[in-house]
Amino acid sequence: MLCKTRGIVLHSIPYNDKYSIIYMYTEAFGRASYLVARSRGKKSSVSKALFMPLSVVEMEVEHLNKRDLHRIRETKLCYPLTELFCNPVKNVLALFLSEVLFRVVKETEPDSRLFEYLYESIQLLELSDKGVANFHLVFLLRLLYYMGIYPNADSYVAGSCFDMLNGVFVEHIPMHRHYLNREESVVFARLLKISFENMSLYSFSRQDRVNVISRILEYYRLHLPDFPEIKSLSVMQSLFD
Image (cartoon, helix red, strand yellow):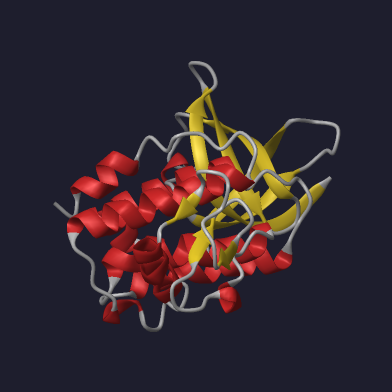
């Protein structure tokens, strides 16, 4: 079946000497995998250069439900991502976020709300010139909405601790070890108010930023099965040394 859809590149791996597998989150099919030739002629309608992490492309695809790998007939960028590919900070952020999405977004059913969130967020990363160091924090926290595991921010009161296992602020220290102490919980409650619009107003020391992102990823790990260590995390953190 031939179909047109928009897609966001999550990851690519070599398949053999001639082909790569491109993992994408598509508007029409949810997560899908495509076989793309690694070396094509100048006149090819499918350029591998379009499949950089977080590239947003419009495609005509051959999609058969019984197949694990599908074919792309034609593709073009939905919008240029010059900053994402040329700005070293944004490039590493794109690598980090695409790796997280590759591990998190597993559904093979379409989700228009999630797709629009990702689509618009990538545009914002391309265009943002303030608060970029906090972009990934906003992105990962907002993504929790679409994963159905967003914390109960309204449960915070002064002096409470954040119970990471149950996603709520509690008055007493939980009986398990997965919680934030009272000082960390103050920071986390404040962080839950961050947005793409106000992210430039938030400032963190390097150590605070390392702690915040590691705690957010710990929360993902507690609530999503098989969520692994993110390999590009150390590369991203080195940007802010």
